[in-house]
Image (cartoon, rainbow, N blue to C red; front, side, top):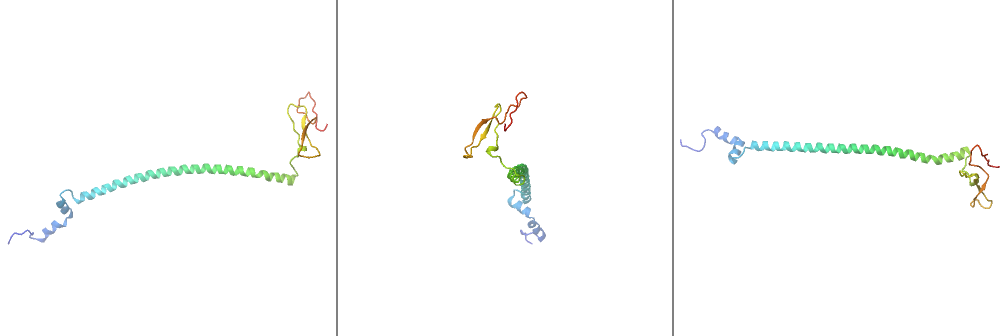
Length: 160
């Protein structure tokens, strides 16, 4: 038999070609495919850890912003309630006035029903209504009322 490059049995020939890692290592003579795969997996693990940490940090910032917005919403709701109460208070005034006129017969005083009293003056200013026109009212000094209520001085009553 002659010596040939072919192996004597097929099993020895198949064992050389079946291991891809050995073929890759023989061919490139640097690193095996397993080392490359492990490095890629390690890189993927580190990358996913960093992304997870960034996502958690973003979640905490968003949650903090949400809590601040909820506090602001509560403050705005309180302000809104206060303004509604204030609005109801001011809208009730015309209703009270109309019921006072309708049910109790009350009215706003006219100028001749008013009496102006000045402190420190013995005689008060009394509006004098002329019969010519109600718009041209003048004030006259008259002994209608006294503002000095001390016991020594007698009080001059209206109508005397």
